Image (cartoon, rainbow over all chains, first blue to last red):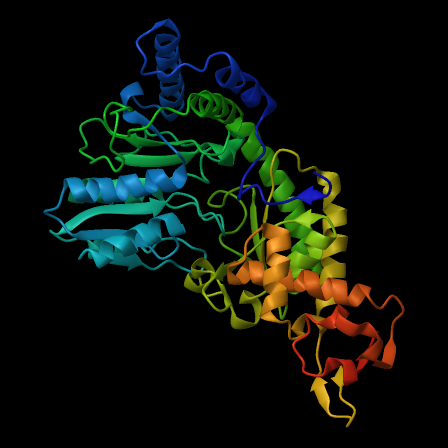
Length: 378
Length: 94
């Protein structure tokens, strides 16, 4: 790809080592893992070895990992599957800044009679813990929160959230799609019932993810058929994807601390240049402990983010805006509205998310392009 | 800015605000995304591409009261009636 790619929160390239281990499963090791013959049995073992690798990196048990088609399916499964298995309780708690996979799943359940609590966040995107606990009642089924926000990088206080869920005996699902690989995701530290990962966010292939389900937790399947994945998620396994995901998890796990330090350094360098050179606000927490190290969400005053992103696109810089589609207009996202970005800035939002190929020497070019772009469209 | 023969201003604003026909956006969306029914963000992207093309038709700027009669159907994507009888001016930002 020519130009500078600054959209790693949207997706990442597949790591060459990941691609390498996937390749044979398209060409020679293609047998159906459910087949009872030598190549099939061998692939069954490969899948379980991949499951073991991922479980080990999350500090959970092998049989608590279930492969899915990605983050959206995992989130749908965690929320709907748990709701369908426990119909006696009809209230679910989420935050105002969840990914659409969570919000739209909950809106679907709302139509079925569930009550959804949308807990507010503060200006930096942190969940209002008191309001969260106050929303819990005897009819509360579960809570689902995004561990690290995809737009503004806010890392929630999982220690407090999980303790509250445990205290009130409600299930907790975490969307760790953006968190994994950037920060430590160690499930032995907190009482977490379900957790979602998606491989393509950390240099794995698209179309594969997993859901961690704590042993003993009852979650109904959403996809019925040949009873793959221990009877919980049917469909012939995406073996190359599973192998690739396991490798990507392994690499991300091993490099997590180095990645965190490198991205924190690079983000802070870029942040300093932006904050001193433009009339803008940076959305989300201050750089450092409670913010994803690869994320900079910036709102420029009296600029349209969509126009700026387009101008940058035409000048070989690729990033996202803070906009959302409705049927007739382009609106600031629900996340930016929830954190109350000032009116004269909110429409001028872009999201920079850096990744492995980003280098410090890209920064002057990005700053120059931002200046040119804002000047051109103002 | 686009004026008609009576000097009435039919459009004034940034190029990105040009009224683009739905048909042109649909055709551009098919060209760019193979999608005849794009969402509003993709429609916006297609519209910007059309505007880029429009600007590129005038390599020398600024222009002042250029008759559009010579452009025939090349400007069909602009949603202004009787465009061939209009005059175009484009300023350059200082």
